[in-house]
Image 1 (cartoon, rainbow, N blue to C red):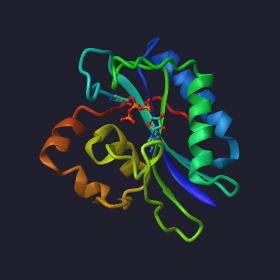
Image 2: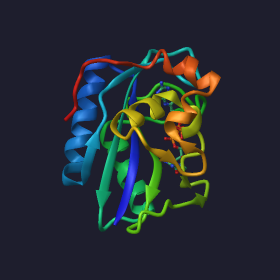
Image 3: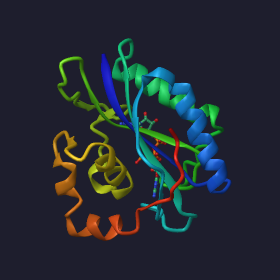
Length: 174
Ligand SMILES: Nc1ncnc2c1ncn2[C@@H]1O[C@H](COP(=O)(O)OP(=O)(O)OP(=O)(O)O)[C@@H](O)[C@H]1O
Ligand SMILES: Nc1nc2c(c(=O)[nH]1)N=C(CO)CN2
């Protein structure tokens, strides 16, 4: 069994379109879905010259998927949503981004990987209020492996400033 925390993000086509893409993604995950956060409007991270994002996180569990298989699935979900990669803009706009933030094996141990194709935990998760705020909403005691309690990370000065701009939209996915 592999449990994963997935981050969903998107900022192309307007909020309603992004929400529709999130809903389709959740439907494709089906019974694997354990918990879904509210949807948040978030300022663009890493590349300010683009529209605000919608973000949410999903806790999911699939007995038959190892982390590599999860990566294949999340990339298929991005491709189905029409994701086009722009190599010139590393953190640029996109219709759907599905990142694997962390993964845990059947005994609850966090999976660690330094592989560039699949780095676990996600190497930038601890810097991203748009991941940590929704995560702490569904799991107030969440721990980001290697970085500690999510609630503690959110008190870091840079993140705290960013987190203030991460606002729930009232749009529900579940
Ligand atoms: N934990 C992870 N989750 C998703 N992709 C990962 C992960 N670790 C490494 N990757 C690799 O990162 C590559 C680039 O992914 P992607 O284009 O979604 O990056 P990005 O969304 O622009 O940036 P970021 O990963 O910072 O959100 C993917 O092809 C994938 O192989
Ligand atoms: N707010 C926000 N900013 C981002 C996001 C995202 O999902 N939300 N994803 C990115 C891809 O790396 C780059 N910047």
